[in-house]
Length: 148
Image (cartoon, rainbow, N blue to C red; front, side, top):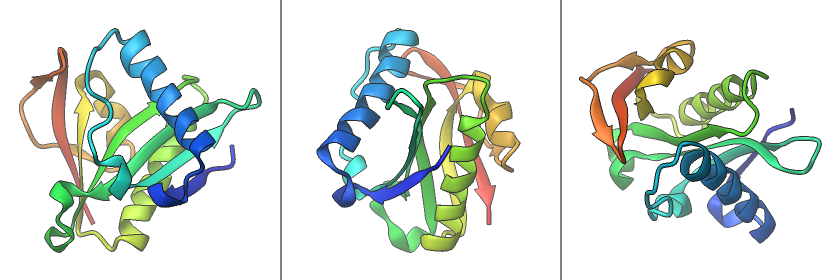
């Protein structure tokens, strides 16, 4: 799958709509989690996404400065989601997100909050669990970090 990498300001309305539609379908509908997806972080983020043969966003994530603080050197990856499971899309997108944090943002560390069941997915890219499990929106999560 060809990946598209764009800052929020570069996204077309159709691209943004398709990204949000995929996030909603997985996080809200599939996982039955009612939460506020629109959290004012998208506008400062670089978005990584790719389309499937049906014209749907098959996977996406966003990369941004943690706490809007570039000086901290800590990039954050969030809203990583795949519409089609078991096809390697998630790994491809995550790898690109790490590359963006490393090469474009020149981050010293990458931080994320992973659903607990998905820690193995992030560990494959070098992330380590750095917290005890905690509940977020009714789903167990852990904090993970990757030193660069």
